[in-house]
View 1 (cartoon, rainbow, N blue to C red):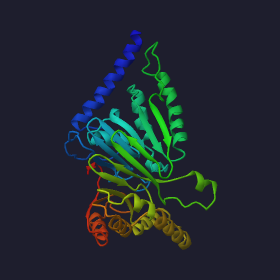
View 2: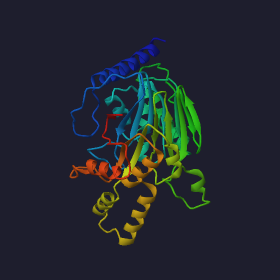
View 3: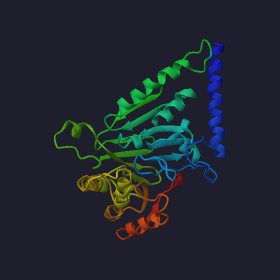
View 4: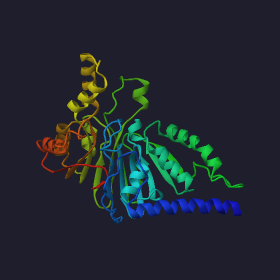
Length: 343
């Protein structure tokens, strides 16, 4: 029993260390250059939306982290997509992994799920067993089951204390796979789910039946927030966003994306390039698409994240240009997000 208490004490020390770093605005190295960051704000009593990572696509970037967002108020957090580095990003904005009530996965591309292992592993190492529900499309359960299986050797080794009773890494974790039109209530948040157009598998195929990409609407006591996830132009997403206070939208700069692709694949044929451009236009949305959707849906404000192709070094005016392009079609407020911003 004493040895088990020793393990629990070690876990508590780890947890307190993480909490202390959070309070001081510190974080573990992330592989990116050190950045001056604003002091971490205290959590508020209403829900704020944080863009933890604003990169579009899987290529690592020193300017932007992989896609992740946090809906947070005091003592409660909901992670919306979990790109690589999500656990560290939560700390950077004053959050605490122990406060996570749910994780929402829009689709199972790796740039949106690469940080799941870090979040779950942190729960294991600090012996956190509070309830955590993970929502996502078909495939989410298989992914989480695989991650939990991969954690079992670490769980068994524990802190290396003789006689320690291992914790089950699955403790407290529930996975729910979603369908188009689902409506879910978590406390005083109501969530609506809509299938979007990020995939276009052959009609009638097994892939079309199984694999989905979703957009989410979070109706909180204070306001309504719609997160597009990755999507092409979509009537369902436009309907989901109707009258929303905040539309958090993905964006693609097709010209910049294609230019970057040509630099990485100099032998790309004109036909392959044309096919890829068609794919990008079908499965993602441009600044014009964002503006038109926001105007027709009557949303109050737009935040652009998941910025694919543009906004990197050498394009210092990209954000201002994107904003102006959206405002050609939309009469509301537009902001181009950076990592760690609060909305």
